[in-house]
Image (cartoon, rainbow, N blue to C red; front, side):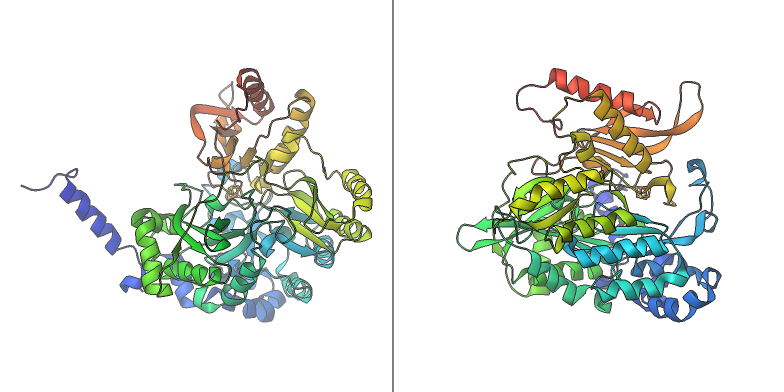
Length: 553
Ligand code: SF4
């Protein structure tokens, strides 16, 4: 009898058929199965730099090859930005070229979030000279400019590279910025300093043509902080500091996390790796992704789909047998952090007796002039180092106790709060409709005014709470793992008019209790209703919580 679609035999055949056509290089599928794979095969994305320097920056925007413009330029951190004035209702209707402005977003990668005061000063100067003053701190520790002209790109690269910064593989189907604990090497409670791991991965992998054509982006994170401060659950690969009972401090390896559509939390391989082994394991995992990753459909091309299909045991076995050629050591899971905020905001003692000072801009939005002032302020207080965090915050390191109060006053005078309200501290927003071609609604401005409203309406609220705002169904601001996640879309107001608004997700979290927020069926709020809605949710929580209950519970 022929199998019906629901019999096990049919399911097996369907799965087999799907995997035959996933475009994995390891199975000999080298023929490109979509436009992205084709342009990557035609020319490595890294090669576009020469054309930018020798042709496009001289001949101007209109000279740019379309496959470079909407494809390979990402390998150097460049995306065209949204033409001003196009409303969110047109996002899905217009062709990409109709949404394109003749200006770019340029992303500067800041691996491990590490900056010197000199680097920050240069970032601020470039912003003021070439980017109309724009500079956002992202939740991946990068800085993003807007309004960049192609003519200025070579000069910007030259200035960034002169101080050791780059935009290499900041976007595209590449190994993106490596997140690192913002307090690596200085925290009193650090389990292990992951800085040498980040440096070694950068040296071996970033800008290496052997890893510049991946099925999609590859996100990574390294932290030896017990606060689990790099969102390790939602990266393609993460190294999380743990103490092995026999071998001492090292890293627990996680793979296959990622948000956006079909969000998945990373899974543990159950393997402990030493600091010296970590870069080998990173190279093995990114090689598996390159060779076995699915290249047929862009929507199934992230590592999380391969990990979900294989499971952690098989993934580890392939890593050991085919790539490392040796077995890994079994190891423990990380412990539950003893606090909920993982952003390092506030004044904290370092392991050398000095202090670090973490502060909160509004939803990651700063500007070039402010960044320059932060660099000057840090230098004037004896610091040569700063860090960006994975929560859109910043930290000044190496401050003597006698200088702390003055630095805090200087930062607060710039509206950079060292003692922020929970709303300032816990609200993140993606780029949104101001510059993003995929956006449906505004985010940054709305996040900022929401903070003001909540501070005014709920002055006594002191619970950690995260409010993450996205401008579209993607997950750049991690809405699925926020206490209150707001996914931008068009909604109907009370009069039946289509207006900007949000689908609400409640109760997501990162940390060892990580999970995705519940999409509250039918619960959509208009942008105008947003402060009333969030106030109501927070007041209800305050009134109904039991002792020790967290918002996410
Ligand atoms: Fe753009 Fe959507 Fe990402 Fe926001 S979440 S930056 S709107 S793609």
